[in-house]
Length: 118
Image (cartoon, rainbow, N blue to C red):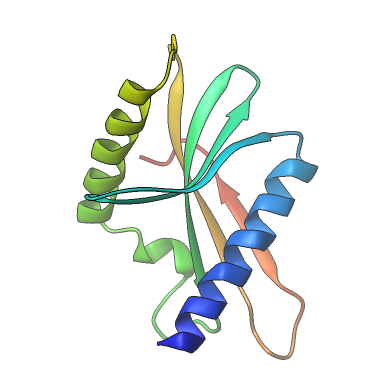
Protein backbone atom coordinates (compact mmCIF):
# COMPACT_ATOMS: atom_id res chain seq x y z
CA UNK A 1 0.00 0.00 0.00
CA UNK A 2 2.85 2.40 0.80
CA UNK A 3 4.21 1.86 -2.71
CA UNK A 4 0.86 2.82 -4.26
CA UNK A 5 0.59 5.90 -2.03
CA UNK A 6 4.10 7.04 -3.01
CA UNK A 7 3.38 6.32 -6.68
CA UNK A 8 0.19 8.38 -6.50
CA UNK A 9 1.92 11.28 -4.76
CA UNK A 10 4.68 11.29 -7.36
CA UNK A 11 2.10 11.23 -10.16
CA UNK A 12 0.17 14.13 -8.63
CA UNK A 13 3.34 16.20 -8.31
CA UNK A 14 4.26 15.53 -11.95
CA UNK A 15 0.70 16.35 -13.04
CA UNK A 16 0.74 19.65 -11.12
CA UNK A 17 4.07 20.61 -12.68
CA UNK A 18 2.78 19.66 -16.14
CA UNK A 19 -0.38 21.75 -15.77
CA UNK A 20 1.54 24.76 -14.41
CA UNK A 21 3.98 24.54 -17.32
CA UNK A 22 0.94 24.61 -19.62
CA UNK A 23 -0.08 27.93 -18.06
CA UNK A 24 -2.68 26.76 -15.56
CA UNK A 25 -2.89 28.04 -11.99
CA UNK A 26 -3.18 25.48 -9.21
CA UNK A 27 -5.96 26.68 -6.91
CA UNK A 28 -6.04 23.71 -4.56
CA UNK A 29 -4.33 20.35 -4.10
CA UNK A 30 -5.80 17.35 -2.32
CA UNK A 31 -8.96 19.07 -1.07
CA UNK A 32 -10.65 16.69 1.34
CA UNK A 33 -13.97 16.40 3.07
CA UNK A 34 -15.68 13.47 4.72
CA UNK A 35 -17.00 12.28 1.34
CA UNK A 36 -13.68 12.06 -0.47
CA UNK A 37 -10.88 13.99 -2.10
CA UNK A 38 -10.31 16.15 -5.16
CA UNK A 39 -6.76 15.76 -6.48
CA UNK A 40 -6.24 19.12 -8.20
CA UNK A 41 -8.37 22.17 -8.80
CA UNK A 42 -6.93 24.50 -11.43
CA UNK A 43 -7.84 27.70 -13.21
CA UNK A 44 -7.39 27.62 -16.97
CA UNK A 45 -8.34 30.75 -18.92
CA UNK A 46 -11.35 31.57 -16.75
CA UNK A 47 -12.45 27.95 -16.36
CA UNK A 48 -12.25 26.10 -13.06
CA UNK A 49 -11.13 22.54 -13.80
CA UNK A 50 -11.42 19.65 -11.37
CA UNK A 51 -8.58 17.31 -12.25
CA UNK A 52 -8.43 13.63 -11.33
CA UNK A 53 -4.87 12.31 -11.50
CA UNK A 54 -4.35 8.61 -12.14
CA UNK A 55 -0.89 7.09 -11.97
CA UNK A 56 0.27 3.62 -12.89
CA UNK A 57 3.63 1.94 -13.22
CA UNK A 58 2.59 -0.24 -16.15
CA UNK A 59 -0.23 -1.06 -18.53
CA UNK A 60 -1.06 -4.51 -17.13
CA UNK A 61 -4.43 -3.23 -15.89
CA UNK A 62 -5.03 -0.74 -18.71
CA UNK A 63 -4.15 2.91 -19.02
CA UNK A 64 -4.30 5.13 -15.95
CA UNK A 65 -7.24 7.08 -17.41
CA UNK A 66 -9.28 3.89 -17.71
CA UNK A 67 -9.34 3.72 -13.90
CA UNK A 68 -11.66 6.75 -13.78
CA UNK A 69 -14.90 4.78 -13.75
CA UNK A 70 -18.42 6.14 -13.99
CA UNK A 71 -18.80 5.83 -10.20
CA UNK A 72 -15.56 7.75 -9.67
CA UNK A 73 -16.82 10.46 -12.05
CA UNK A 74 -20.06 10.76 -10.07
CA UNK A 75 -18.14 11.07 -6.81
CA UNK A 76 -15.88 13.79 -8.28
CA UNK A 77 -18.91 15.75 -9.51
CA UNK A 78 -20.48 15.65 -6.05
CA UNK A 79 -17.23 16.70 -4.40
CA UNK A 80 -16.85 19.55 -6.90
CA UNK A 81 -20.29 20.85 -5.95
CA UNK A 82 -19.34 20.75 -2.28
CA UNK A 83 -16.10 22.62 -2.98
CA UNK A 84 -17.92 25.22 -5.08
CA UNK A 85 -20.43 25.91 -2.31
CA UNK A 86 -17.54 26.82 0.00
CA UNK A 87 -16.18 29.40 -2.45
CA UNK A 88 -17.18 33.01 -2.99
CA UNK A 89 -17.58 32.47 -6.74
CA UNK A 90 -19.13 33.10 -9.10
CA UNK A 91 -17.96 29.89 -10.75
CA UNK A 92 -19.71 30.06 -14.08
CA UNK A 93 -17.55 27.74 -16.16
CA UNK A 94 -16.25 24.43 -14.89
CA UNK A 95 -14.95 21.24 -16.44
CA UNK A 96 -13.68 17.84 -15.36
CA UNK A 97 -10.27 16.70 -16.56
CA UNK A 98 -8.12 13.61 -16.13
CA UNK A 99 -4.34 13.58 -16.09
CA UNK A 100 -2.90 10.16 -16.84
CA UNK A 101 0.64 9.53 -15.57
CA UNK A 102 2.54 6.40 -16.59
CA UNK A 103 5.69 5.87 -14.53
CA UNK A 104 7.42 2.87 -16.07
CA UNK A 105 10.84 2.04 -14.58
CA UNK A 106 12.67 1.95 -17.90
CA UNK A 107 11.28 5.08 -19.58
CA UNK A 108 10.60 8.73 -18.88
CA UNK A 109 7.17 9.51 -17.38
CA UNK A 110 4.36 9.73 -19.91
CA UNK A 111 1.80 12.40 -19.01
CA UNK A 112 -1.45 12.87 -20.88
CA UNK A 113 -3.95 15.64 -20.07
CA UNK A 114 -7.51 14.87 -21.11
CA UNK A 115 -9.68 17.98 -20.93
CA UNK A 116 -13.42 17.99 -20.28
CA UNK A 117 -13.72 14.21 -20.45
CA UNK A 118 -16.76 13.85 -18.20
